[in-house]
Image 1 (cartoon, rainbow, N blue to C red):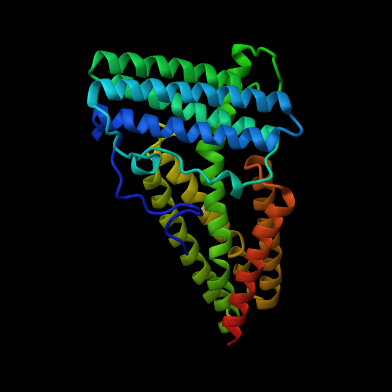
Image 2: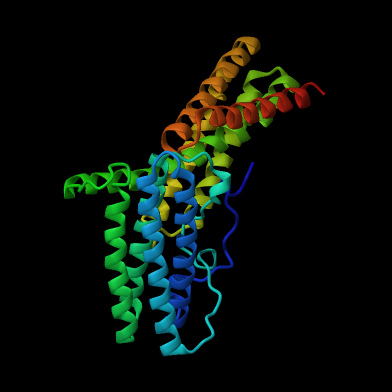
Length: 331
């Protein structure tokens, strides 16, 4: 059972945003703009063959990010000198951890649009919060200007799939709400469901085949599910305070993640309330297949994972854990 969600790691040795000085805020902004420019280049290359107009928009956005970086560097040089401290997003609490582009290929134009819009939303909130914290008038003005420019980028990103077409305010707000729903509910819920469904398989079926006792097996599964739910809930709540990313309150995300972890484990535990061992085991195995199918669909529908890749990653991993539990139980 993991203490932290898939793809994440403990982030206790990080700075809070409020603790950053104005120089450190500028250094972090420079690092973010450089990272975003390179990501936009990667996205442009990924969609250039099939969507050349979208690729051109992405290159234009990359050029604007370069312009932002140059303005930030000039202000830093004027206020604090030539040396720019190395401060990255992973050094500050409140940012979403991102996978490298080469790990999540192939990328469709819809996936690119959603990811760019999420990046711009996060950056716009960062600049707005940084401007509120800044005391120097020049720093405050530049950060406020960049927040407004990132807001315009966000509107552009939400329309990448409809080239050169203007969107209404209502449509833009609905698109933002959908993105926030994915960030605040779907992502933590999916992390919990995956952990609960997979990590409890081995102890549950090991206990089942070791004892052939449905009551004892049910108690093992119940304990594993509740323990995993508590662990994953705390891990999600501590991983990101949501102040910059728009992912919502840590408590709410922790509750969603914890509950879904518990549900994932209880789904194949409840059949062992049936007194007959083999009937309970066959039903539990069927529930496992349903759980893995649901997880694969959610990853495909919301997380832009190709369906075949989602099925392979989830089902094969789950089956291996399932077989490990049976083999250990029969040892």
